[in-house]
Amino acid sequence: MIEEVKSFLDKYNIKNKRVIVGFSAGPDSTSMAFILSRLAKEYNLELVLAYFNHNWRPNEAKKEEEFSFDFANKINALFYTKKAPKNSIKTEEIARELRYAFFEEVMDKYNSDVVFLAHNKNDNIETLIYRIIKGTAIKGLCSIPEKRDNYYRPMLKITKEQILNFIDENNLDYMIDSSNDDTKYKRNLIRKKILPLFDEINPNYMINIENLIKNAISTREIVDEELKNLKAELIENEAINREKYISKSKALRYEFLNDFVGDKLKCHNYKNIKKIDDFILNNKNSQISINKELFLKIKRNKIFYIECHGYD
Image (tube, rainbow, N blue to C red; front, side):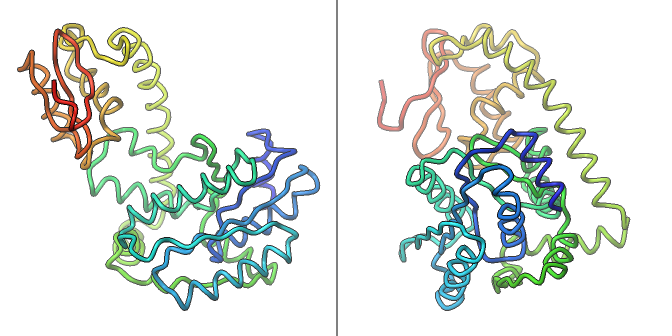
């Protein structure tokens, strides 16, 4: 595992930096932080363990925070923590938004441009299954990227089993999040109920799904190159030329919309992409709601966003 993380540091030339380590006190982030501490001198890294308290499990979270502080001292790392507001909505989506806002805050505070997150191979596969169930396009089949903006995931090629073995071999303590057993959370349901059935069907399912992800990434690279050219042709001053848009094939239009509006849709699926495409094809001067904050408006052969209060 140490060599895997070392190769990752070399791949992205991460050295002479202050690195934020997303830390939960669980086995994944504990092993990642420990490995980084072993490599810190060689790569001249200063580590900051960042623990975010979601305020869901007050008693457990207090113990996790104490453990995280102690572990940071053991590996000679800085430590930063923050608690979510008591009135924050307790959903996985909101928790994720708050967590990433916290990481942005930590980067600003410590003048860093690198956050390491401890997602592993099992997480990657669970994410893919979750996206397939919800409905996804090729981009979603790529699952979790090993790098996106300032966020790096050096453990994506490492299985949970390898991590637990590493923890045992190095006599590392860690905390267990009791909510990981609660199957009301969809990812836990996939992990505990669905993936064991995959194992019954094919014990090599993890390898096969990983290959699917690799193929999707290769295909996505081709699509991204085509999209780059398409956006250069269709978009001018942040508006789409409607006439040029409707001249394209259905496949190109749909992939373009996946990129242009996909992340703004509350429910990103084929049905809603088709709905927007139909709207563009059948209207010359109208608007359609994208989410609570945005409309997509057509006017004078231009397609552009307006805020919900921005009627004209």
